[in-house]
Image (cartoon, rainbow, N blue to C red):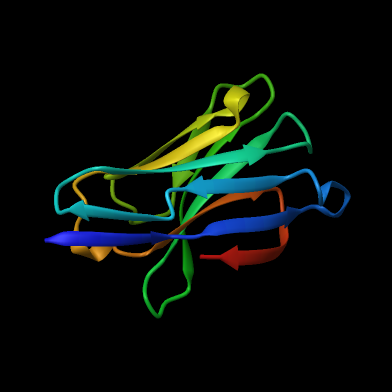
Length: 133
């Protein structure tokens, strides 16, 4: 059975002094997969605030609020690290390639319950967000 994962691009305005410089672009816009396959959602970003980078992944199930999944971050002088929300399965993983301003979310062993809208977001603070699907 084919699954459809819907993805939207999140256009965030990050911090008042960096409004025109920080953004995320994710792709593909939609994915079709069969159960037990792996899928990867890609995200490029621009970041001007500092050498500290925080990228989060969120999901929105049909009729539900947006929920935090996991975060990858790179702090100045420290190796990349990250964390997951409680209860997020090990099937969900991400990588942050800070020098190339790229991250991805990988979902292995995909299941019907994984059908959702997934968002890539850049921190420190999203003051406004425009969604386009």
